[in-house]
Every structure is written in C-alpha cells, then in structure tokens.
Figure 1 (cartoon, helix red, strand yellow):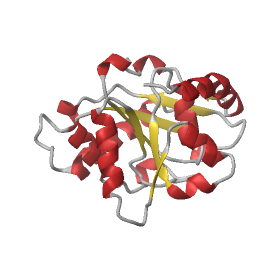
Figure 2: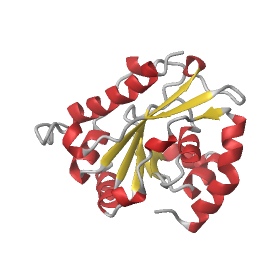
Figure 3: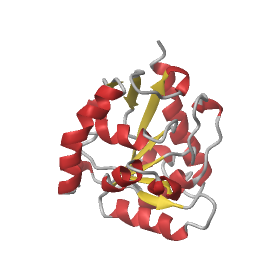
Length: 207
C-alpha cells in the first residue's frame, strides 16, 4: 500500500538515488506482489541512506522503516525518510508501543522495514556484527513474510558514485523462519535465521 505522496516522491527521487549511488539490483523480480499480504523487509545496515536505497529499488511496496529517533532531526534526511514512511524508535529506551504498532501495521497488510543489527555498521563485514531480537519477535507475532535484502558496496563503506548492490533474496514465509512453529517463541533464533539469509545473499554475490 503506497500513499500518493510516497508514489510521487518515489517516481521523482528513486531514479536519482540509483544514479548517484550507482545502484544495481538484478533481483527485483523477487519482490512479492501486494496481493501476498504483509511483508517485513530485513536488511543489513551500513549507512544512513540505506532506507532511501531500499525504497529506491522496491517497486511494489512502500516499506515503513523503523529508524532511530535521532535520524529525524538530520536536515533534509530526516524530512525525506519521514515522507517515505519511516517512524522513530528510541534505541536506549523502552519501545513496547513501537513494537506493538509495528505488529499491528503488518497485521493490517502494510510493508515494514527493519535492520536486525539495530544500528549502522559502517565499514564492517555484517557477518561479524551482533544482532538484536526485535525482527524475530515482530515477524513471529505478525506471521508476516520476510524479504531479506543485502546491501553491498566496497568495504561496506557507502560513498556517492561508489557502486552499491542491492540483493533481494527469496521471500521467507512464517512456516520457514519458525521451522513450522517450533521456534515461534524464540525471537533471537528467528532473527538469526533471517540474518543468516541476508549474509548468504552477500556471499552468493561474491565478485
């Protein structure tokens, strides 16, 4: 479900973002149709513009990105991500209301985007970074399909006019990431499964 403003901004700015960051995405066809229902987009996190680039390559969905509250005070970027549908989370505080809101959005059929690492890991191989359990909790409670995405650039350090590859993986249904319900209450194990898929996408695309 896209808002009219999002659709307009996407039409206007997505080609520009793909041009400036030399974005390539050869796996766009793996983005599921809107008729498949709720979608939780999960990606590794290397730069403040990751939400923008994810939105730039997804054609069918408008991912509402859960982002740290500090981002919304950044000039231009804060305005842009809010218009793209992002909403704030306090990394240092209690976020029960945000989690409940996110689950409700997914249950209502919206697309939500999350970064299992919880924060940006600039210049670091994502396979070596810790993760948080939030994505697994939200996925299992909402029973949403998960779309894994790997964001890849040289040394995982994003710069303008440095090629960025966005690799979209096969959607992961609830039955798969919970092992038929066996892991339903184990949020960390579910998050790890999802993040392992994200990491594998980068390895499969090794140049």
